[in-house]
Amino acid sequence: MLCKDSEDFETFLTALHSNADALNVEVHGYVILEDHFHLLVTPATAEGLPALMQSLGRSYVRYFNRKYSRRGTLWEGRFKSAVLQPLWFMPVLIFFDTHALRLGNKVAPEDYPWSSFPHYSGARSDRRMASHSEYWGLGNTPFAREARYQAAVREGLNSVQLQEITASVTGGWVLGDLEFVANLQKSTPRRLSKKAPGRPRNALED
Image 1 (cartoon, helix red, strand yellow):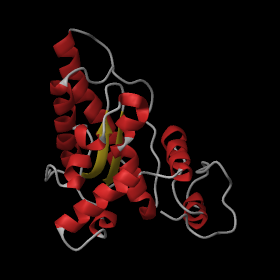
Image 2 (cartoon, one colour):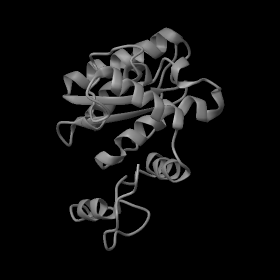
Image 3 (cartoon, one colour):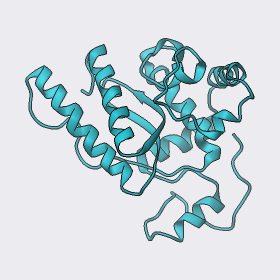
């Protein structure tokens, strides 16, 4: 269990933003549920993300253990992370903002307060959030961007997008077209996708 009541969710979110700010990690999107969370972030350095997860774990666990008179950690093992190509930013953000509904909680995105949907839909402005260029490209005014984002969330993701994002979340695979993955693969011996990168094809359509 990660969060039991609204105070826990709010404390977790505050700890996320304060630690991210201290470590120069931009927070673009998130969803926090009772037993897990997902983040969409851009760290300034290679050490930024692991440092964020470590400091977030320390600060929030201290609060949680003190409140519920318990000991130990809240999550075991190393966190899973994946690199994504910018064209996947919006689908991943939509994946987050529809996550509670998709898991069977029967909570519509506009009724779930613990994701980045309220910020991007215009229901609540959060200055701690770092809006990505892909979001800015939705329109020339805040109203246009918010309206187009709401429409995109209502439309949801297709089956291919859901499969690709789910595989990336659970397996740590890179989200991107074959050329993007192949270029990243040159810098590491670790396999970055389920399929070995080959001759580049057209990028996946959003």
